[in-house]
Image 1 (spheres, rainbow, N blue to C red):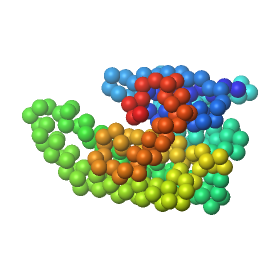
Image 2 (image 1 turned 90 degrees about the vertical axis):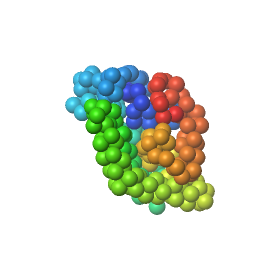
Image 3 (image 1 turned 45 degrees about the horizontal axis):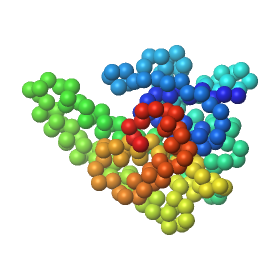
Amino acid sequence: MTIIVHHLNNSRSQRILWLLEEMGIEYEIKHYARTPQGVAPPELLEVHPTGKSPLITDTNNGKNKVIAESGAIVDYLIRNYGKGRFVPKDSDRIEDDVFYNHFAEGSLMPMLFMKLVFSMIPAKMPFFVRPIGNAIVNNVNSAFIDPDLKRKTDFVADELVKKCNSGNDWFAGGDKDGDPTAADFQMAFPLEAALSGRISNLPAPIKTYVDKIHARPAFKRGLEKGGLYKYA
């Protein structure tokens, strides 16, 4: 059995490498580089119609099953190869695991992406209208994007403090060995992106949490194998 990770630099697929390293199972990496425009290359369309990363191919039993979407990949790997690990040790924390699995990409990441897109708009405008573009972007940020992100990151920080005070600062309390669960593999990337400069004055517990992830030997191994990753 071999898992093939179709890995795009500076992308969500880094969380898949981290999970696989935590699992300690065999896998192969196929590297893809972003285009000069910063988007995924067309070669990924040959793997899956979405043309996005992460993607994995599971070659078990010669089926070459392709799984897309990071949340689906994390769930698939844990269900099929986790051997009882990476699921909350306390059954009453399963709801937390499910919530953060969806919150990461359904609520937090879209606003971070929107902030990134809006930050790029003025630079693509003709010089003489760029001040107008900057004014529009600043107004959208201050009226809509920044307040939304502050509310969500304050919520995340408060939750991390509560979990730390209860003895375990993983989002769903950790698995039976004290290791992260699906919630953590999913939350890592948006919080890394937030710390990369997209949000100013982030609450300290978020940096503490991300630093904890980056210090894990499995994360470091995944980083070494994955190559360029500007969020670590």
